Image 1 (cartoon, rainbow, N blue to C red):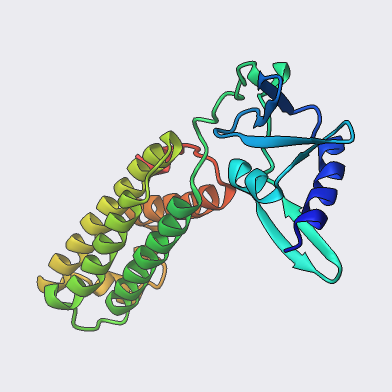
Image 2: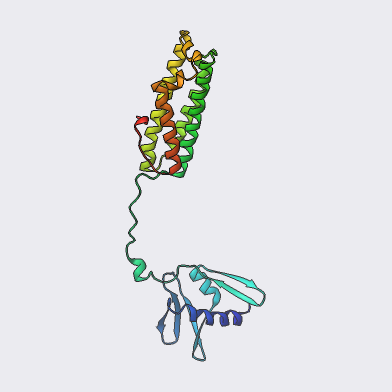
Length: 234
C-alpha cells in the first residue's frame, strides 16, 4: 500500500474522530497518538504544521481493519471508541421481570407433552369404548412416552412462570396416569361394559371431565406465553 495514500486518508479520519483522539507529547521533538480506551500509541510526524500518523499503526491500536476497493482504502474502526459518555455511565434500570412469563423452549416442550397425553388418553378411551383388549403392556408405551416428554419439559424450565406451569403439567400427567391405571384394571376385571353400551359414559365421568378441562386450559395457557392457574389442574 503506498504510504502517502494511507497518510492522506488518515487526515480525513482525524477530522471525524477528533473528539476521541488525544495527542500526548513526550518531549518537544517527539509526539505520539493515543486513542482513548485503547492500549498502545503511534508516533506522530509533523509536516508543514500538520500531524500525520502511520495508518497501519492506527489499525493495530484500534484493532480495526483495512479493505481495498477500486481507487480507495477503507478504514473500518470498531463501533465503540473513546470513553463512555456521562449518559452511558449511569446505571441502567431494567424494567421489572414478568414473573409469569413462559420461555419459548418450555412452551414448545409443554405443548408437545399435552399432545402426547392427549394421544394416550384418546387411544385408551377408544379401546375401552369399543371393548378392545387393553393390557398394561399395551398402555405402557403411551405412558412412557408421556413421561419422557414431561422430563423434556422439566429440563426446559428457565423462568418462574415455567416452574409454576411445570407443576400444573405434572399434575395433569399424574391425573391421566391414575385414570389410565383405573381403566386398565377395570378392563382386567371385565368391568368396562358400561362404557361400550353408552358412548358418553366414559367422557362424562368427573375424572375424565377434569382431565379434559385441564388439558384444554394448559394448551391455551402455553400458547399465551404467560402462566395462569386453574382449579381443574389441581
